[in-house]
Structures are given as C-alpha cells and as structure tokens.
Image (cartoon, rainbow, N blue to C red; front, side):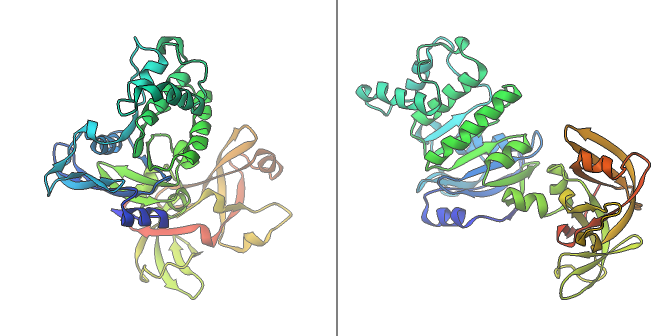
Length: 382
C-alpha cells in the first residue's frame, strides 16, 4: 500500500499516542491495510461499497478479527495476531457511531448516553450528560425518547454516547447517510467544530467524497480490502497514484501517452498528434507508456479576442460536445481527438461560457497547464 503520512501521523506512530494499524487476511474477506492516525487528526476511508471500509472499523472495535496484523492505540496494544493478543470489545476504549444511530428506543436520550458511562461515578453522570448535550447542541432534549427526536438529533445523541465512553479513538461509520442533505451539511459543520476540542484520532468511513474532502485531514482510498493510496485531499485529487485511484475518486480527464523526452523544466509527453509539456516526472524513462491526468482547474479556455498568458501552454483545438448549466456554473465536455475516445471536461462560470459562444458543436481552443498534468504508471485509464 502507498502511504503518504503527515508529520503528525508519523510522530504519533513513533510515540504510541495515536492509532497504528496493520491488517492482512486472504479469507473470508481479503484485506491488506496499513494506516496511522494522530491525536486530533481525522482520517477518512473512502471507496466503493464492499471496499472493506466498515470492516476496518470493526477490526479496531474488536468486532472482527483479521488473520494477521497489529492494532495499537493510545500506547496500548489491542490486537497482535503473532503475539496472541486480542482484547475484547468492551476492553477497548472506542467511541463508535453507526449510520443507523443504534439508540435504545425505550430509553430517554439522556439514559442512552448514561448507558455508556459505566466507568463514571454515579454522582458525576448527570453533570457529564449536561456537558455532552451542550457539546452536541441538544441541551433541553435530555428526556425525549429517540422517536421524539429528528434524525439529526438522534445522530447527535449517538455522538454524545460515543464520547461518553471517554474513548481513545472515535470511529464514525457513514454517520450522516441516513439524514437529508440539509441536515447532513449542518451535522458536518458541527462535527468540524467539535473535532477541534477532541485530542483523539478520528476515523471516518464515508461514501461521500465531498464529505471526506470537507472534513478529513487525510484520506485512504480503499478497493477490495486494499488500501491503495493515503494522502491529503489535495494530494489525492491532483496526484493519484494510478488510474485506478483516479477512477475511484471519480476524477476525469484520464488519457494515455508516451514519454518522449525530459528537459530541465518539463517532461515532454506525446499524446496522439500533440506534444505536451508536463510537470517534470524524471521517474518515467523516455519511451514509457503512461496514464496521465489533467485536473479540470488546469484546463484554460482561450478567450475570443482577449488571449491570456496561460494560453501559451499546450494549446489544443477542441469541439464542444456538451454544455450543462449547473446554477451559475457550466460543465463543459470537449471532444479532443483522443485515439481511445476520451473526452476533456472542466467547469467555468456560465456567463463566461455564453460570452465566449460555447455551445454543442462549436469549435474552441483550450490550454492544458503544464503543472496540472500528472503522469502515472500505465495501467488502464478507462
């Protein structure tokens, strides 16, 4: 697995204060995952259904046992297959929030939270409940039962209950998938604010890439039980390790080309009839077949009658296949003569697209900015 850890994540692994995990299995669920999470850091696991994201959380919580590997958190070893260590779930200080809340329906919201306070002296529990309900913006609703609360309020109770355990790590398994979009955005905002007060690692499983980008410090892209790449959201979106990772992140503008030569300032990439300047990639020898990607932000439309400096970089003639208005933005799809039929997509302000006469069937010219072109080992860019 490729991992690009932060300095905080590396330090946490060294001094034992964060989460350190290495798991492997061939059956019944294939697994190959290694990750580190520092205190106060949020790491998101992203990938398609069946990628193994929730299985990773279950392994940390002690609800699933991998054949090989080790899990350590807050200076304690929770699982070590080689040494025969496997702490029971109740002995692991884990706060776990499920997508379906998993609240006790016959108990009040406060009682649901108190149920996780077996380690707290009875005299201190009422005050602790008040503090937690204030933290998750539920003050005054302590005596309501789950059926009397909205979906967003129930999820806040679930978060309060998870924190009531004074956990060494907080695990969030698709925590906002069961609520409507507006509520989801509010809960995400609240979580972003709440995490600033938590000095523990946070692991978020989500199928919502926008959610991961908005909340996480780093992300792990998973597929079929494997961790394919770890990095910051910016690294993954602009420098995916492979076309496979790019596809899993729903990145577009994937093509194949051949490295022609290197200069001190650029790598020259042959793409059909075009010779493109790409960011220096000396690791690929001349003649190598590569997959390559250009971010939509690196596609610059040549403005009719008002050329800009950026238009000197890799100018490409194109034809508009589709212009899709999306509010004040327009999503543009271009036919660029790619031998494999690949298209080029980017977004721009709708008024600018209309002012430049863009419409299906119209010819135009775009530039592909050199530093936005990213080369990857050849695989399958389709």
